[in-house]
Length: 67
Image 1 (spheres, rainbow, N blue to C red):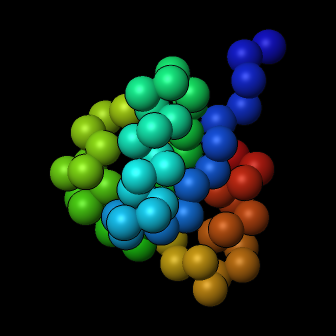
Image 2: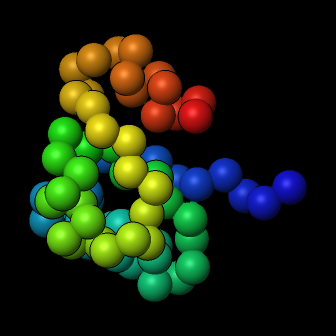
């Protein structure tokens, strides 16, 4: 079974984006939870699985963790 992706919050910001890029460079699979998939694609390209949603929406966040 392949390793599960690491969930990144805030990938369009300075810290979260730097963490996401560092993990991608190391070959780690990541999933990004963001309100804006377009911004994530601009920053990370197609190297990440993106789940759109707001961190204040508990059901959406749980879905990103489980899915």
